[in-house]
Image: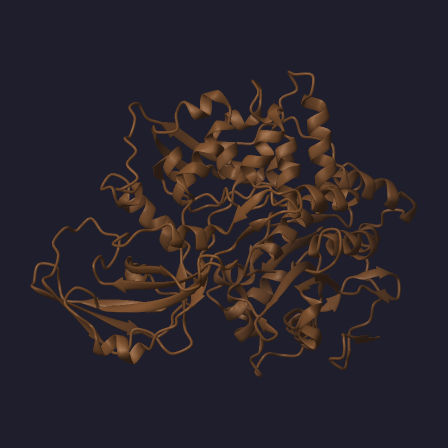
Amino acid sequence: RTVRLFGWGSIHSQSCKMKVESGPCTVRVLYSSQSGRAKACARRTCRIVSDVLAKRSSRSNKNGMILANKPGATFDQDLTQYNLNICDWAKSLKQPDSGSSLLILFVSTTGDGEHTDTIQNFWKQLLQKSLPRDLLVGVQFCLFGLGDRAYGHQFCAAARKLAIRMVQIGAAFLPVNEGTAGEPGYGDDGTPGGGVLADLDTWLQSQLLPSLMFKLRIDKSTLDTVSEKVVSPTLSQKSFEPYKVVVSEGKVSHDADNPQWGSPEFMDAYSDFLESRRPITAYQYSLTGLAAVASQSLERQALSSSSNNKNTLLLARLVENHRLTAKDWDQDTRHLRLEVGCIPSLTNDDKAPTTRELHGLPYQAGDVVSIIPSNSETEVEHFLSVLPANVKEIADHPLMIQVNARGTDASGMGDSLVCYPNWPIKCTLRGWLTFCADIHALPEREDLWALSHCCSLAGESGQAQRDKLQQLSDGTGSALYTDYILRQKRSWADVLYDFDSLRAPGSQLSSLAVLLGLLSPIRPREFSIASSPSREMASSTQDAWFGMDLCVAVVEGKTPLGRSYRGLCSDYICRQVKTST
């Protein structure tokens, strides 16, 4: 059969005829994401596929499936388990009992039709000319690409390249029926009524679910019934505890001038968390010399995605922050000057060197700086005010957080939780909301589905609000989600305020473990560096290794109904005063 992929020419795939298998097939969900949208698609798909497989498990086990890694993993994370060896990874896909595996892939496109950071190692391995042409024979896959049609022929280019390469080395698209190969799905940011998630729902109903029905030998006449139940699932009554949280006695004083991540009590825990947010392609900076001596130098090393160097996260001091545009101009554009060297890294070592020296250029022309912002004190207070009373009371108590391994096998709400594995192991709730959790973000539809489990049914409005949250997350509620969340830019706190059953007695948000599992970590933002690296090297002083100039436009505006909004990072930067770290 010839498969044609949006002008990339035609390639010959394997036969679409389906071999009846004797054992269960392992399903693995992988995604590559730059901003988190592909991960959201993977989360939603994992929950829906889990629902289909749960219904199938009550029937015959023959031709069954096992979802191995919900809620999915990045391509590079999956490859790392096999020491970055694509051949070993391919062998793991070929189960001895069934002879085949199924991959469900979500691939984002960034830049000029390029792959994102989270698939770079996988893609380099896959492009090796020495790979055998039958490396993935017996492996079937479904693919959904994410992009923006405004970029013309580069729309979903990364997904199309991956599909072609997969077929070249033996993989085949999962058939929809006998003799008909499945087709890749394409999500467009500009699709009315929900963007890529609206396109995802269409692809799930027209391609993925029919393909799974065919592979599981489920009668096609039950497709509408199963799909309807999948999109509007029944609620699990089991509580889900993805973390073990211990609350300590006593309160930690809150001081805006001395952030919690700089406190000796919490510094190491925050350092590990912030290091986990480092972009994969970040430079490695090598510190030479000891703090005990009177000198210390900094040298930029080559890119390395596997380095464990803890000095890659540098702190900078703000020495310039002024507005470039006129005060009566609509756009607030700022000139910022940052200097690195006053505090080289997060460390408990208080022995500071008296001289500093920079070896080599600190960065290259065209590089970007990646900044990790934090939420404003006002926004954190607003978020705390809409949480259950028992949670608000412990906002300033020290917490010990440990990932609960048993939670990974839970069903129901657990399929839609984010469950970030690298939260600080010690912090306060206020500190976590300020420096770690992305409470400023707009909740995804899958987040609203998870929130529907948290509604308390003790009050009269509990069931109605639970139904409304499910409707917002439903595929048929795309227009409602667009109007309520996207156009009005409602954040997590806004949703919690509108649905008061989420803070009523009996709400699952009374559990800190559930709250920790709901929210995603703050995503670093990238800004182009507007200064010359050679000039910075020449102006290196004892007080700073190097500096950089940024030109930042503040994101702010009003929604159609007059709600004011501001961008998280640009607002964070511009509210800083000189000498802020």
